[in-house]
Image 1 (cartoon, rainbow, N blue to C red):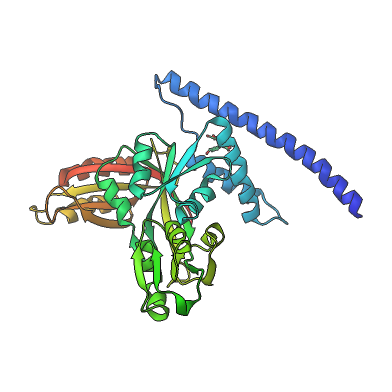
Image 2: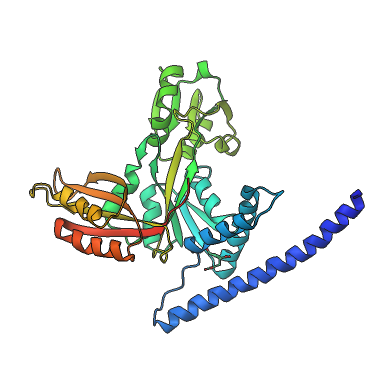
Length: 364
Ligand SMILES: O=C(O)C(=O)C[C@]1(C(=O)O)C=C[C@@H](O)C=C1
């Protein structure tokens, strides 16, 4: 096929594609109207949830299975990410809060999940993101919950301990590569800024290559890059995306200890999604520590109902000294029969129990 013919055919396909994209967009508006109608019939005054992670997971699975190439499944999914992003923005003005400034891994995870058509709002602290969702200042918020190398993100867990009015709606995994960014070469660097999590992920490299440099913890990796750019002899451990955003050079690419370093984020909103056939649920509870084996009895309830636990963490309850809030993630949706029964039974061993939310399990 010659060049002109190939371009002519592409032009014809583009015409059909734009038509089809708009046909899909009109159907998505119908979906929005149907959701509103169904809420009205239930007598609920609230706005429907536009972002439906379970449905998106089904759409991605479907397009992956339909794809015959030559486009890779990743390319087709990236295109669909933007199609659904536009579809969300057509249904409503959705905003997403994240730990800023721009260029943090939270920002990248948010764009990766919601696409380019929505508005993103940076906040200075993780607790501010969570508070913004609780106050409905933003539609959704995205917060880091754990890193595969350095473990739990305690700021997020501590913010949950205060029982904010939010629900977990989805989970997002993001491969994370930390880099050393600076306007200076290694021998001239005397100070390194970063977030405690990023320091944790790059400690070995810094111990070896910058043992004498002062490490200064700040609110985010992008904030670190912003500060390093404004100071002499300073550097930041941050995403390489921040190099161009804050006019820094990449002194060393990938200073992370583990090759498969991954951070898991949670999308928070006003409610959880409906059941899919593969969900997880995050709970937090305290147990009466004067009761011998109280935690063990509580966890045993899950075993009895054949419910798998995928994560457990604890933080000080802040109500009583040496008293803990336990965070347990289990397989299943809070509305699944076995999970609902377990949640009822576990109350006998818990002083308080909060179901933080149920969400479709995501591949990582
Ligand atoms: O199915 C829905 O609930 C929609 O709003 C439509 C749609 C889509 O475009 O496919 C858009 C956003 C949701 O997150 C999931 C799916």
